[in-house]
Length: 217
Image (cartoon, rainbow, N blue to C red; front, side):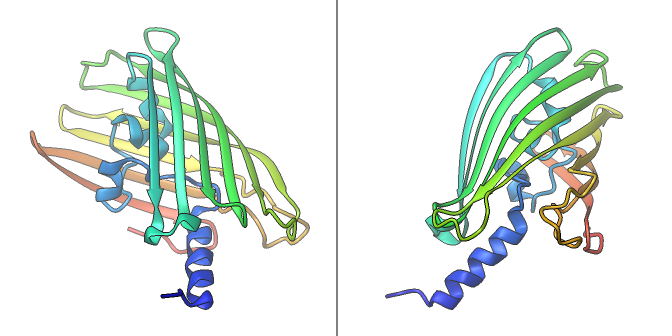
């Protein structure tokens, strides 16, 4: 059974509008919570809040693949390598890819995250900044390839043994893609909180604001 070309294009356009170089939500736990991961502190939550990298105390690597609508045209992939370079700081290299030869978005990043306070101290803070190189293109060359540099930043506060607060931003200055004033990389800002209700139960809440769109809870 052949898929309707209009439906394929609609799904592709929808996924492209959601991606736009922001490869958040690659972690299984955050994805299971509807992408509400700004205040989570596991390794893959760092794709949502780069401050999480500060809690990686050993060198580590990871690979993730996600396929939207079970279509290879809408697949996302990510790989990272995190190396602690001091007792409180971690350096990370990561690469993310979305799409296929017909249309793709790529991001290569260098991150530094630092923890302020001891890891076992319930009142500590972590900050991180990520420098991003963004590329998009098509196999046919119908659209001119795009190459842009920007940055992201994140903050997490372990307010208590059970409560984590998080803030993050992606490309806060809304960089223009071309001469069209309205065509920009959407700036993203989010703030969230997570609370450990029990050993196997976490509650999260988050508000997200994307440029040109109303806030989303």
